[in-house]
Structure formats: structure tokens, C-alpha cells
Image 1 (tube, rainbow, N blue to C red):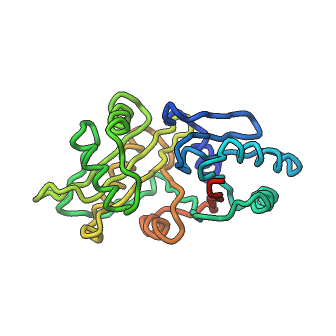
Image 2 (cartoon, rainbow, N blue to C red):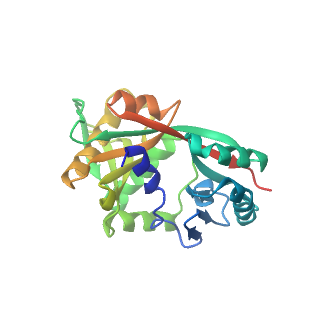
Image 3 (cartoon, rainbow, N blue to C red):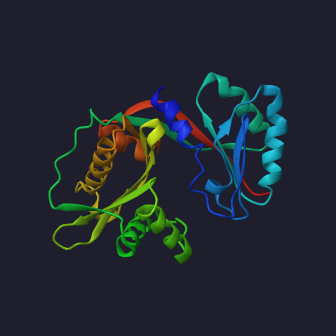
Length: 258
């Protein structure tokens, strides 16, 4: 399979969803629905239906997402044009465009970084550092509750699918950058997410250090690729400079609550 096909398949695994999320999974459609107004939890990651079925499926999802923002993942392929037209007719619009980006772990060439040390999240203090970095790197992000922190730590320490890393300044021990990786052993793929650096530390190589830690782990596990959906005008240029290759694109189509 091509890396972009694998990337799409990583979005079909819902082992991570919280308990208040309802999952509807059948061959033609996979979607999540949740009372919380969070697009990630009111999301349609798989659509496999003939064009004449699309209006009925979109209506089903719209009813499930009635009072929250609704999101569909749509790849940039000719076969998906009927879905784009049907979504547009139903009040959805393109929101965020991403680049399907991946790299063969054997071809990855790490950058030389000095004065940075990377630690895996294995305890609550390191997890709090990880979250603090994300809040500074991505202003406006939703605050994480204590309950969510506890669940995240359990995923990072007792599970086998989620790993997170934090880069620190070697001298001051200040957390500078962080990033996560979800493991898909059956696909031999590591899905990268939430990679970011605090504004005042950018350009020092902290992101590169966190990326190297994740690629090294994927290689140790015998994976073939790591990759992500990189936002076209922000993270995509960064990972492409790190040697990632572009394998198509995917756009979030969203609709506000109604």
C-alpha cells in the first residue's frame, strides 16, 4: 500500500476515543459523535459509498452532529469529487487543507542538535510539561482536564499504542518542544501528531530532536514509515524540509452547529 492509503487507514482505528463518544462503523461509513462541541470527536474518517447514497449518509451524520461542529475527512482524489459536491450542497465547506506526508524510516537523516535532551512521557510531571508546550505552541487550544490527563498518562504508560516525547533545554531543563506518535503495528506505521515548539525556542532544533526520538522508536519497532497529515501552510513546510515526501492531500470539510 502507498503511504497515503496507510495514513487514511490510521484514522479508522478508534481505540483512543473517550467513553462519551459513540462510534458508528459499517463498510460504507465510519463516524464518531459526541455531545461535546469538538470536531475531532464529531468526525467522519471513512466514506465508501456510491454517489446516490451520499445525501442519505450526510443527512444521517448531520442528525448525529446536530448541535456540534461536524467534520469529514476528504482525500484529494477524482473518486471523491461526488462527496465534495454532496457536502457542499449540505452546508459543509473546506476548512483545513493538509498534505499526506511520510518518510521511510531507513531514509530518514536526523539533524545534528546540540543542547537538547528528549524524554519519553512516562510520568505525570513529564506529561504536564508536554501539555504546557502544546498550549504555548498552539494558542487557543482547549485546556486539558485532570481526568483527561490521567487517561493520557495511562495510554502512555500502560498501553502499547501511544507514545509522547518532550525536548528540554539541557542547561535549564525548560521544556521546549513536544510531539506524540500512535503506533499501528499491523500497518508498520507510526502516526505523528501534536508536534510543536514554544515560540521563543524555535530555530534551535528542539522539534528535530523530538522527531528523531519518534523515528528512532518506529525503526526499533520494525516499522516501515512514519507520517502525518501536515497542515499545508504551517507544519507541511517543516516536515518536507526534514525529508518527508508528499503523498497527496486531504481536506477537512466542516459545518458549524445547527
